[in-house]
Length: 434
Image 1 (cartoon, helix red, strand yellow):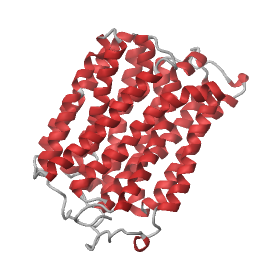
Image 2: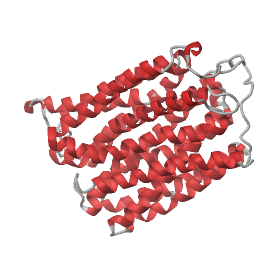
Image 3: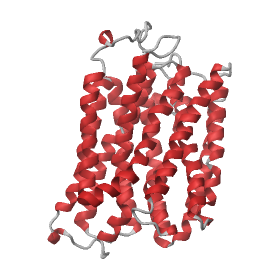
Image 4: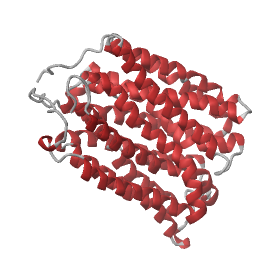
C-alpha cells in the first residue's frame, strides 16, 4: 500500500487489474442490451417481458453487491475477487446456451408471442450473472482503499471505473463483428471467456500476502478497526450519504446500458450496425468524464481545498452536467442526441468517481466493502423498480421516454442535496460504538 506520500508504482499495476476486471464486467452485462433489439425481433418478447429479464439481473445484483461486500471483508480480495469473476464468466457464457433449447420447448408465455423456455433461460442466466457481478465494485473499492491514500483514491477510482465505460465502448464495436462471425450465441461464449483469462493474470500478479508484496510499503501500523454489524452501519448517517448517492445514480446508468440501444433503435431507427458508432461515442464520453472528474478532485486537494469541498464541488458539477439529457427524446437529429448522451454518461461516471471514494473517506478499510455493498444493494433495488416502471411505460408508448429521461436528469441533483444535508462536513466514522 502507498505510504503517506503517495501510491507506489506497483499500486498502479493493481489499478490496471481492477480496470480490466471492470471492463470485462461491463462487457458481459452489456452484450444482452446490445443484442436486445435483435433478440426481441427473433423471440417476440414484449417490453414488460424484457424488463423482467433485466430485473432478474438487478435483483440478484443487489443481493450479490451486499453479500459480496461482507464476504470480501472477511476473506479478502485476493481470494474473493477471482471467485466472483469466475462465476460471472461462466454465467455470461451460459447465455449462449439458450440457443440449444429445442423448438418444442418454446411455448407461449402468458398468451403472448414470446417463449416461456427462452425467457426463463435468459432470466436464469442473468440472475446468476448479477449475483456474481455484484462483487466487482465492493472488491475494487476495498482494494483501492487498502492501496491508496485519500488524496489519490478519486483518481484511482476514476481510472478503474473507466473500465466500465471501456467495456461499454468495446461492446458495440465487438458484438456486431462476433454476431456476424458466429451468431448471437457465439458472442456470449467469447465475451464470457475473457474473464477466465483475467483470473490467470490476477493469480500471477497479486501478492499472496502483505510480506511478499513487491516494493509496496506496509499497509498500516495501526490495529484494525472492529467490525460493525450491518444494522449498526445502517444507523450511521455516513452510510446513508453513500446509499443516497447510489440510489440517485445507479438506476440512471442501468437505464442507459439496457434501454440506450433500444432507444436508438426505436427513436432513430438504428439497427445493430447503425447504433455501433453512436453507442461507442456515448461511452467514450463516459470514460473521459470519469477520468476528468477524478483528476479534478485530486487537483483541488493539491491546491489546498478541503476534502469536503473538493468532493462536493465535483459531485455537484457532475450532477448539473446530467441535467441536459432531458432534451434527448425531443431531438430529431441523432448526433445532437448522442452529444447530450455523451455529456450525461460522462457526468454519471464523474459522479461515480467521487461517490465511491466517499467510503474510504468516511470508513476504515476493514468495512469499506460492506458499506459499498449496502449502497450498491440499495441502488440496485431502486434500479429494479425503475426497470419495472420503464417496461410498463414503454409498453404503452415510445413517448414515455420523455418521462424517463426527465427522471434521469433530475436524479443526481436531488441526490447531491440530500447527501450534503446528511453529512455537511464529511465527518469520518473514527471509533464506532459497540
